[in-house]
Length: 106
Image (tube, rainbow, N blue to C red; front, side, top):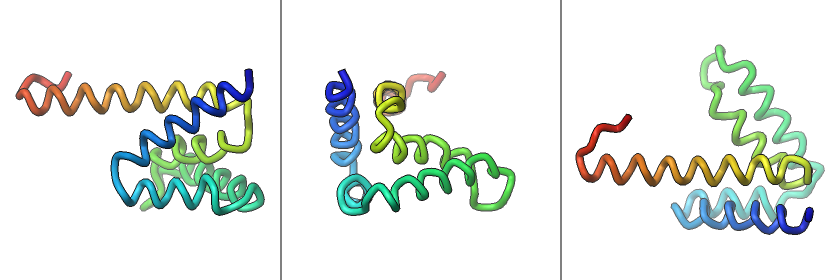
């Protein structure tokens, strides 16, 4: 069951990588090139930065990013994070379609 969730998470990272070349480079660097010893502290720093979102530059955007990086190494988070990524991508696509058609964005 764990391998299934791992593949699903990898597919979501691949889908994000197809959006832009910059995202692709970042995903390759974080996902493959840096090891666990750098990924886990990076994820923890992102989560702490998200909690401290009242400070300048830090924001709530750091929490989902930290969870995505942490899910690479912690199998318990993989199904939750991949489901969240799927929902985020679907809402983004719906928002773009509505915006292109001139419909209300609600």
